[in-house]
Image 1 (tube, helix red, strand yellow):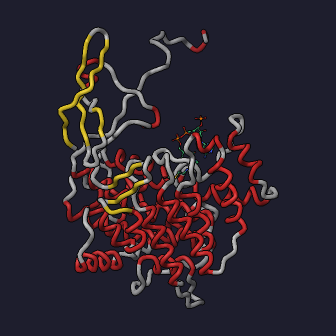
Image 2: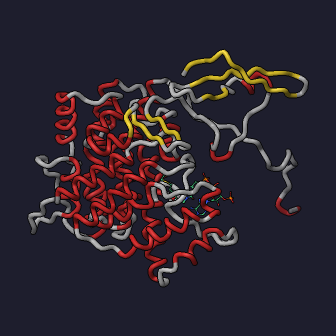
Image 3: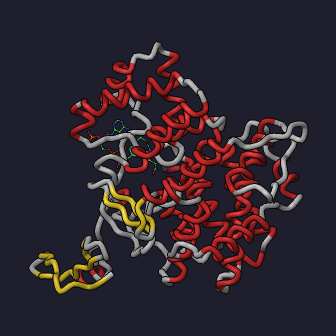
Length: 431
Ligand code: CMC
């Protein structure tokens, strides 16, 4: 971030305050108000951080008006078309595309650490069988701190941080697959290290000791693409959570576990599950798309069109464009005919021409079509957000690492107090 010669002026109570203007490498400009309170006594108020930059970051560039998304300068379109998820994860976390030897090391290290401690089985057994896998995932990720207490050291050496990164990348798919197996009451499957990242996960999800399950290359390739599309998205709700938790010098595992919980909500990553449930509900109710469009527009009706709208994309979400095409390809390659896809297409068609959605710039987001692909791949609905978490992991790691390397201060927003003024305590008999 560079300081510019420009300043903005704030006139307040007869005083004029000069506010420095800073700019990023893509020329986006920001007012640096960090000294404003000391000078004027004023804070800024911005519920939901709709217009507040919380950090400087060199990881992802996003222009929501133009529909641009780039990881470390590379467009999402090129990465989704050409790269493997582990290659993209390396890029996001370490800043450059890996050379062949670096990629081999990275893959080997991650493959070597896919096993999780046998005591995790005991932890898993403690969860009721109908537990949502997101709750299990976040709990077990926090539990990694108990198995690797050295990860708790607040003044971590970069070697230890690298070790925690490898362990987390390696073990998350195993934990995710075990959470699922535990839920459906099947034996847990151990990782098979001759398979790649996606193939290994699929084998642990769908394999059983009784059957020789071979992951389908179409499914592996689709999963690879989906994970890349979800891998990083700058300061969204879960990523900001990871940074703010990490800013207290909490460990990587504790911070990522918090991010998983933030992702779970239906307005964020939980939307992929909510979309399919919504499409199923519309289908069960006769498939009348217009009826649900009317509900979405009615301010007295809490119903929202899940998978539509985005805080930062006010043009098409570029990930949704890629996913929509991939959904068509995957369904035709796997020979799957999914009636909810027709309902999804119908909703999209109506929404794209309806003034309510057009005026508010509400377009399908990444979650609108991802659930349809996950379904075609055989992933159960309550695992969709877990898939999002597996994809987002490199982003959370990179943001936590960057925050730590920048030596950022503890995150601590201010507020405007709206409660009672000071008053005297009233004893119980006089209330
Ligand atoms: N259906 C109907 N109306 C909507 C929707 C929707 N899905 N999204 C926004 N609106 C309306 C909203 O009522 C408001 O109207 P008005 O100006 O008349 O009050 C206007 O559009 C602006 O909405 P907002 O809630 O102020 O926008 P936001 O930036 O705070 O919220 C959002 C963004 C994604 C939470 C919201 O669009 C939403 O709830 N979408 C559905 C949930 C969803 O699909 N979430 C996944 C996001 S993509 C994955 C990820 O990165 O998390």
